[in-house]
Length: 470
Image 1 (tube, rainbow, N blue to C red):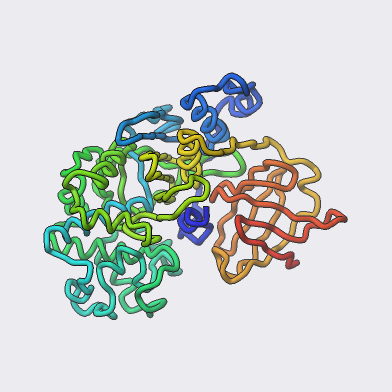
Image 2 (image 1 turned 45 degrees about the vertical axis):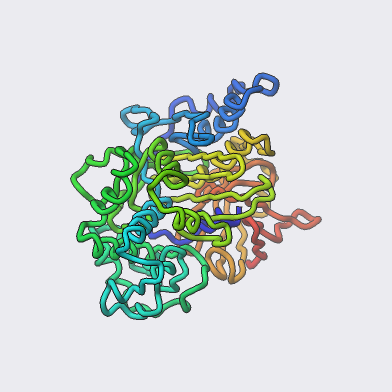
């Protein structure tokens, strides 16, 4: 989970507030209280277990999209849930296209590796050889960019990033905004996601191919793998990409349309859209065939490189094998993918809701299909009086928290419990027991810790503890 939280953490994401239309599904409360079709004893096979596992996500408006699982490249489970456009009741299907946010890095990395296979780049090529005059360009190599160890300043962390999302951008305009910012560290060390490193990769791909980034990725990646439903959204004419409409959570169980952004502002790191079927084509192409040379394929999937080429890689105690994961979250959409090496099992979950549930769903489905432990959600529909006791309260977190030294405000409003972040984000907490919750935005477990008198003293958020600071 630590690796996943690196990409699904409550960092400022540049979203403005805006006016939004609230949508609540008809009959929602009835659906929550109705007897489950997957009651204990009625569910034996893997398919039924997966449907029972995903069902609470769907019923609580926390997943709308497609789940696909494949073993050795052959699908063993596929299912679509929810609506591609709720207002017109257009359902999601196995052919629905979704923006995939940070999972887009996999396509950018693949395009760069294809250029290396063609001899037009190398891992050791310095940025300065392609982008003349780029500060510290002699020190930063293509490998540093691919492994997010460049140390360059990150545009997504700048105060003006919300304004960047409101206008059409190009890889060149994005890099111009960070060109003269001081580097965060020397190249060679991974600390957190480097969005601007992949903006810079997009610009380098343009320069080496002589094509706009979207066309270059189509020629280098999508066309060779017959990924006919995939592309890079560079703000072309409305409707050309045909992706599902994006939505976001509001309150504990509500949904509303997500704020629109210019996807060109995420060129290279989060601007791609695809289908679950195309994701399987992509992964199958990576692990076999002639899409990449054996040398670069082994480099991409080398578990010694913990982060890089659009993947997290780790030895998992839960699964007892090397596991590759990646997920993404951008306004209106979220995604998650996992590959278990020993079982040759690939699972992808794509959603047109802005939360981090697909990361958990992909891992949960993988656990079901491999016979490992998993937990079904137990989400409550109301907050008890005991839960609300002692609120509001403030908590101070440490420097290594998602938002360093954050002072987080816990409060109850209209019977709902919320967390207010310094970045301006408000997270609704879904109750699972008296003092336990799930942060609906980031899908992180939250616990309120009380002393023997019942007074709130701590707030546990994932692996972090915040101390009372009123």
